[in-house]
Image (cartoon, rainbow, N blue to C red; front, side, top):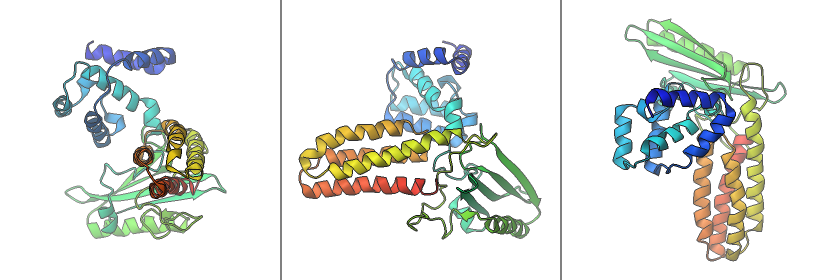
Length: 327
């Protein structure tokens, strides 16, 4: 299949749901990519961004193609990669990207903890259940060679740059000191309007007072405001709450090592719920936590092991509680 024909097929699949389902069913007949190959593709998407990523194998940069072949040059590599890109780089995934527990919107532009510590960036948010608002505001200073530019970005916490509305603005300054003063002006104004610094002391779970992860936004509210793309989060939050229920049941019922078989069967429901969550930092962490917990449960031989397993499940529950604290 030529590159142009592949692109035409993918575009048709995106417009026609019946054709898309048939195509997905056919593509799933191919072999699965190896874990290292998936890691290469995930890193590639994170580097270039979903809006600029390739849609088929032949569009990938040469170094990425070579890296994939070095892991394993299977006969179905092209179709496997095409399937993976179709599953992970389509309009539905783009609209969901960065919606749950996401990192800075301007991460690719260089908004890092080091920049925040040097006074050249900030990321703040405001989640207000009373007014049904969940907003973020970011600022970043970058050198242009002849001066400095102050980049500003703001929108809903559930936005993605591709389909949600994220407003942007840039301000030019001749020296770093002036740019920093302007940045601090925006920062103080946001705090005065009730925003919380994602790197500050008030970035905590309001219910328990426990600190949330620095530099990572909590889940925003699920309301769908006009033009802001909040609908995806509405479906996500119920799944997160279901996860907490299943895990709570497992912790309560897991008393003896011989209970592990029933617990593992029950936790299959957890994996199905995780599958309903849009691909994100949160989903990846939950999968990692669950894989580790299931290995521990499967190996449990005495009551001490059971206690360790319940502690691992409690870690997952705490993580979910933190992410849902502001919803």
